Image 1: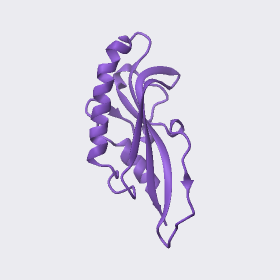
Image 2 (image 1 turned 90 degrees about the vertical axis):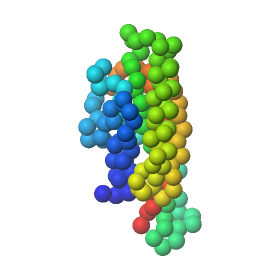
Image 3 (image 1 turned 135 degrees about the vertical axis):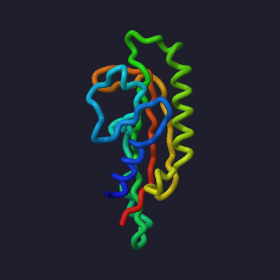
Length: 145
């Protein structure tokens, strides 16, 4: 397994209390209410990454910077309690997620340096539905070679 594959597998296995984490090969196309809240790796929401940076390479110490998104889907927008009802639960889930990352910021040694993470809370589209949720955008530095 490559370093990127290892890091992705460890991110997908992140344990956050009360939240279902989906492995990459088990990600559903759509979610049922019983599967919520859920954490899903969705790379396309991560934006652009710096990619492979050739400057500063030394033998066996190349670095690859990757931007990855991990989405937290709390509850569907229609038929839910609305933002006022969802925001307290969302804030608690974001706190729990941050605590889980802080406990293992190199994803078990898969990353060359501790990850950086930003979060955007709000409406998150997934599987043809909109959810109250958050997008955690990770910046990873991986060893190459």
